Image 1: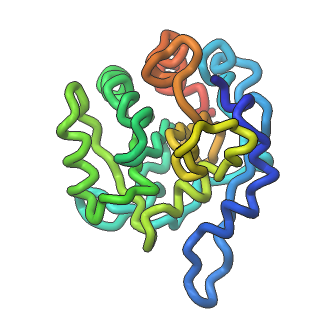
Image 2: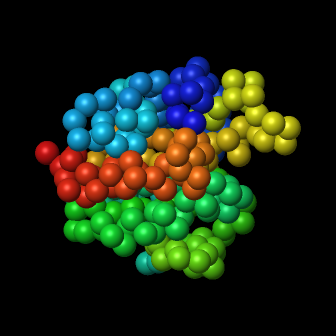
Length: 233
């Protein structure tokens, strides 16, 4: 399954915006609209699973100062500026999110450096009230040693709603019991060293990867190229 085959997400951006928690008097947070084209149609990333990622419709940066929680308390993604990131949005109720964590952990061990990192962020959670709750969930998993961050918005779901646009069950032909919320994750995002959102893969496994798109040779090729600085220039 590729993200281009999931839905026409731009048609439902307004619906996603309506779900975001807004403080009184605050401007409405922007929901990122994603194009149904390839984020990396040419160059070194085109020969990887990167060609299945979607680009934002317009040049867009990570939505800082989106509040996050880490081991040392409140933080933002600006702390990682200067690194290329592969961000994995996940939640405890998302089975495909959890299934891809061992692969992401293995790849992070192999390719993490001063200029590249795989960074999970828990969002849309129903159970995590603290960063410790989120990290403990990953610690209990076999072969997973990834540090995570936690969406610190009031409802713990702002990043999911902004970046992993709500999709229509009618368009997806979802089975009974699957909702627009459970269809929003897992979601992988490529963020360049300047904080630019460069691509998104939303949904379940790639055709040849049983545990997500990174559980493939082309997935590892994407991580290797990112770690080598494909987006650093």
